[in-house]
Length: 375
Image 1 (cartoon, helix red, strand yellow):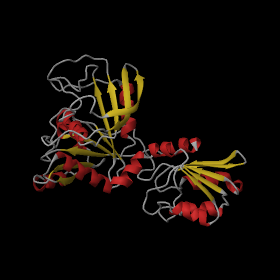
Image 2 (tube, rainbow, N blue to C red):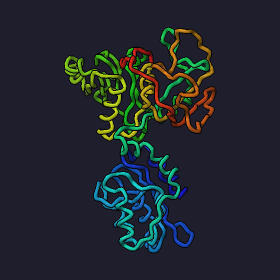
Image 3 (cartoon, one colour):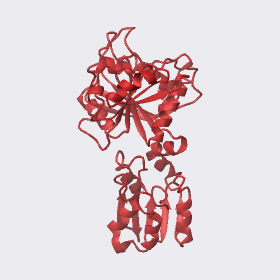
Image 4 (cartoon, rainbow, N blue to C red):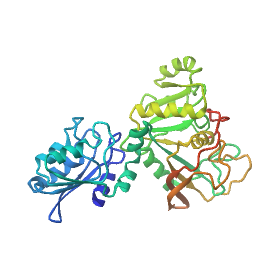
């Protein structure tokens, strides 16, 4: 099963909104076939493993990281393939919460006399597919927050300058992240200050929609996002009171507009994330600025952090910090990273981990959605 999980992880960025799945076939203690879900719409892991094994699959035990599907989707049901191949036993790490499966796949296998065991390395399997599971559970994408800051915790100088806090090795990791997510989100202030393209260079397996969070929906026509909207999608989310005025101009530029309810920032982000989830987005990368990060953190929307720390000492009480917002009352009450991973990238420290929220967030009712920050 550990090998199956390793195989499953190879599909990251290529299979979403489907889950990552790996499969290993074993006969008499010997691996006779293995496979993983390589591409959305392509053969599932079980089918890949069965093809690799050929006739040797008869009588095998199949170790699968997620319950085999039992419905006709873009591909035929995997349960039927396992049954037809003469698989004797199926060991599953985790049941699939997808409504068309949800235990039905395991039940079908049992009905055909196949011995079924579930729950082996279930926690590890759930960790790999956390974005998929979140999308199934609450209908929202997994939110990754990324920023680069100086050693003294500054996102940009008091004048708004931030290039370059991180080095080339760190920026390479950022482009790899961009290349495997469905959306990259920034505030309007970042667009005005940095004029970013928000694309992966070189391109990755996915082309992310660029998402701008703002109040009015106004963007500079000369900005790189507007100028490249015909090549890479751009989505602007704004207050509903401004949508009728801004939508015509945005549509003329080839940009789609989303109207958010004129309510609290938390409700607005909930509405936006629900819409992105409805579109099948599984992972989005938030790249700033400070007030955007603050609103996401206050609302407990950040699932995973990717922080790049340079060696500079920028100083300045008016310099920008990574996360604004209301914040938490003290270190004993604030969210923290679970088992963070720390890597040295040339002169930078790269810290990444998933966010654990306990206890409830502080009140963020005073937050303003429009981020007038530099990045």
